[in-house]
View 1 (cartoon, rainbow, N blue to C red):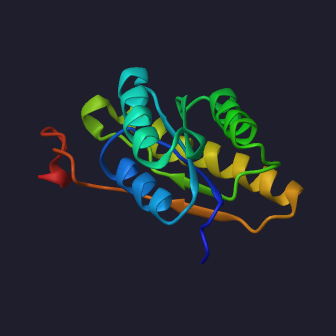
View 2: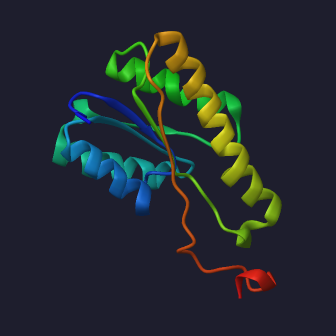
Length: 151
């Protein structure tokens, strides 16, 4: 798949796996909108990637994936920044472990993915684009000690 000038939105991409995905997409010629709930981490990553790949190829939008209006705003701002009708790729990467509580874990890891996916599908379908949606999950974080299935 040719990624030159494709526009990607990556949730949870200020650090870790999401940041690594952003770097790989940028190296392949894509334009990337990184997002994260932590503004400081997001802006730090934006500055680093902007210096390396050019400010016109990367933007940052603060976003909590559990809030539908913030997901829609993420897409709106990415499309506006890159001057496109619709993004080409969504990478649902934002995730937390159960150390933050099982409800928060479910809201981010499940509902956040649904929010991003439904927004992307709606917009891509309207724009007549094929849906390029990737879901990422990791158990690389320290498991919750009180949850017997993870011990």
